[in-house]
Image (cartoon, rainbow, N blue to C red):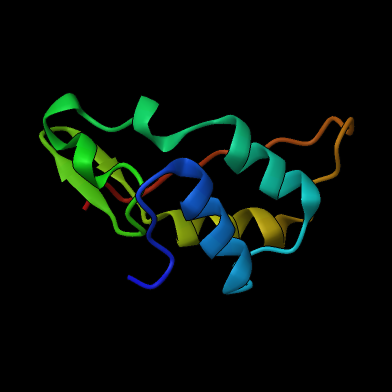
Length: 90
C-alpha cells in the first residue's frame, strides 16, 4: 500500500503526495483525527497503514478510500453539510 506511513503525519503526507486529496480541509481533517483512535488495540500496528482493517465487528476502509470520498464530496468548511459512511459490512 503505497500511502502507508509509520505515523499519522507520514500517512497524511503520503496520501497528499499520491494525490488522494488536494483539499486543505480534507488534509486538516486527516491530520487532526488520528486513525489509531478507531483501530482496535490488538492491531494498532495497522493504524497508519493504507489498508483496510477488519477485526471482530470493526471494519475500517483504507484511508485512501476515505480521502477519495471526502475529496469527491467537495465539503466546505463552515457549511452545514455532512455525510454518512454506510458500508455494506462485508
